[in-house]
Length: 48
Image (cartoon, helix red, strand yellow):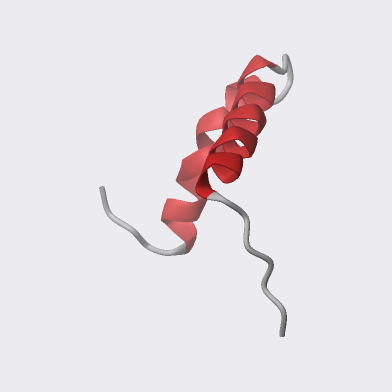
């Protein structure tokens, strides 16, 4: 299996763009917390 290497700086830029698009969207913005964090916390049963 081939796993491509992506530099950390590129991943950080992409993540920032995705976060910005979600939070600025008029429909998705109200769900930003769930999309970006809360659903994963629930899925993996991670307590804060």
